[in-house]
Length: 403
Image 1 (cartoon, rainbow, N blue to C red):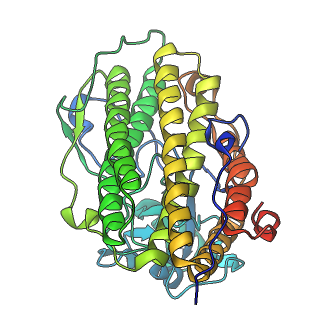
Image 2: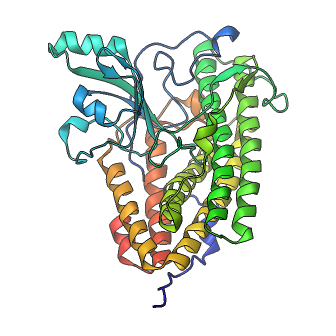
Image 3: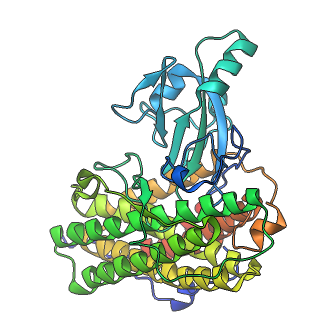
C-alpha cells in the first residue's frame, strides 16, 4: 500500500523575521533579592532562584502539594523538606491542564523549576500545611533546547566558570547604568549564552538522528551550519554578559549523555523536531526580532538582529525536517504530529499569561518584558506555526484548532 504524502511547505515568506507572531506563560516576580555582582560569584548556578528572575525567558513562582510536585520531578533529583529539588515540564502520570493545583505553574515541556526552601517554609507556616513545596521556574526560550537523554526530560545547560574562551570580541561598556540593572542584564545575557551553547549539542544530536533515518544530505548539512550559527550566538551573548559584568565567564562541561541520539524513528523525529525547532525556534526568532526593534543600544541590537535571522533559518530547517518525516512516514507520522501539536498548545493555553512589561532600561538593552514575550508567542502560533503545520499535513482544520 502506497504511503500517503503530506503537502510540502512552499511559502518562503513564512521564514523571514516577520513583524507579527503561542506560548502563553506567566512571568512572575522571582523569590529573593538580586545577588551581588562581584567576579567570584558569577560561577554560581545561573538559574539560582536567590538571584534576579530570568530576563531572557518566561518565568514565575508556584507553590503546590508535594504529590503534584513529584509528578514533575526530574528523575534522580534529591529531596529537601520532602520536596523534589528540580522540576521539568512533563508531569507523569499526567494531570489535566485544568487541575486547579497547577495554577501558576508553566506546563511548557521545556519548563525547568528549582525548589526555593525559604518560600516553602514561609508557605507552610502561613498555611499550616507541611506538604507544600514552592518553586521558581523558567521556560527555556533561546535557540533549540538540549533535552537530557530520553524524550521529555529536563533541558540541559552547562555550568559557568571563569574564562574568556567564549567571550568573542570586546564590546565597549555602556555608561550610566546602575548596579542593579547591570546585574540583571548580565544574568539575562549569561542565560541566553548558556542556552545557545547547549543548542550546539542539540544540532549535533539532530544530525545523528537524521543519519539514523536515512535523511538527505541537505538536512544534515543544515544541522552542521546551524550548530556553527549557535556557536556564534553563544559568543555574542557571552561578550554582552562580559560587557555588563566586567568579568569573563565561559561554559564548563556538558554531560555527554545529554547529546546521545534518541530512538523512535520518523515519528519520534517529527515530534521532537516540531517541539524543539518548529515551535521553539520560530518563537525565538520572532522574540529576538521584536527585542531588536525595541533596543536602543547598537551593540545589543546588532546581536539580536543576527540571532533573529539565524533562528528563522533554523526554524525553516526544522519544518523541512518535519516535511521529510511526513513524506516518508505518511499518515502515521502526520497523525502523531497533529496530536503532539494539539497537546503542546493545550499546555501553553493552560499556562498563566499575566505579567507587566519590563522597565525601559532593560528594554533599551534588548530585554523584552513578560507581556511582550507572551504576545510574541501568541503571534508565532497564530501567524506562523499553526498555518504552516496545516499546510504541511494537508489538514486545514489544524489552523483553526491551533491558531
